[in-house]
Length: 354
Picture (cartoon, rainbow, N blue to C red):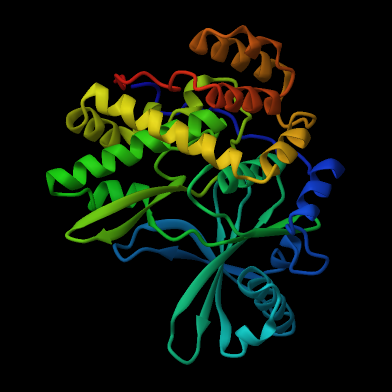
């Protein structure tokens, strides 16, 4: 199965280069005025947030002085308007900031903002985080290569992200695993596809705390889709297994579900389907993927040692020495996609190992 913790050290944050900023500006990802992460650090107190069972969620609700709260909440509503309506503040006429929570673990220590409609009490969330180049590349690759669209923007050294709807996978695996045989097959199929997408794009650290499961009713059955929500380990680590969700112990229920419900030939079929879908998304991306690769291949988002070690492992896996010639993590991602476009073999064996 692999180790419980494939990543032992906290990743350093990499700055966003001028070249990457140019790309982001070209595609409307940069805003001149908005909330800054440091603005939200001006809180004076914090209280722990517990779930309905009384367990600590590792989030804390932060409180601001009366003199500062209107300014901070106003900037947060403006950021929400940018995410939802390209800055049209009229959508916030009946909205208010109900809560600002700070996550007490992880690389970016994000803030989670709860927005409530005072007319009908409907609510939504969005996130304010420190900027990190790996995360930006992960968000862009997710937007281009996956079936999931990603909405976010940058302001200086801050990233503001839309909430990704779904059941947190760790809670889903504890409480909501499907009952019917048909649902189990559908969920196993989605896990195979998710595993393939992560490996092809070199998105790492997809244990059950870093993705959500979205359920959609399809006639009498459920359809499942897995969405990544954490992109801090995009193309950074040296271990190949970090980019394969099947190797994380937290994902063991999904791995066992897959082994029990899918024959090896079905796994291979779904891997090929997902690779074909990724290839088609690249072809219809209107050169956005190529523009991203031009930037990513020149950028520094990992160490030389990580690049060389991961390149050697990928070369052995694919039996392709072009990976050993790669000099950046962007080169490795690019070569992975080029193999896919050449209709190469699936990224993982159809026999998903324990």
